[in-house]
Image 1 (cartoon, rainbow, N blue to C red):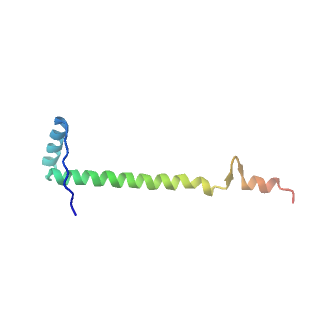
Image 2 (cartoon, rainbow, N blue to C red):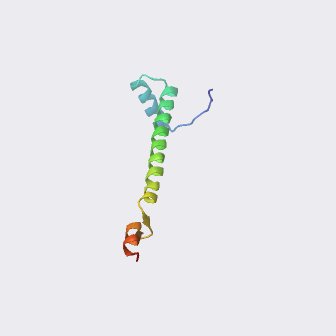
Image 3 (cartoon, rainbow, N blue to C red):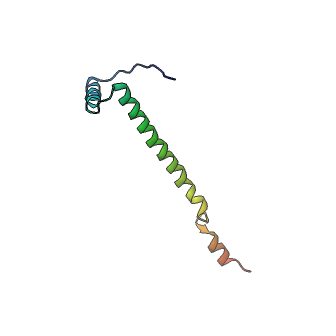
Length: 77
């Protein structure tokens, strides 16, 4: 499925886009699609990493400023 859209670029951006298109021997359409997919994959990967690192604190055994090991050591058994 394809979707047709129109974009308006500032002159310098449009000129850069044309130069990139020529340098990479791709159509402007193909160049923009590649750029969007690269950016999307980069952001998707970063989001997965952020989600992974945000969950690490849950598995460290910390309860506030106290660890489970400290609670066990101070427990009178």
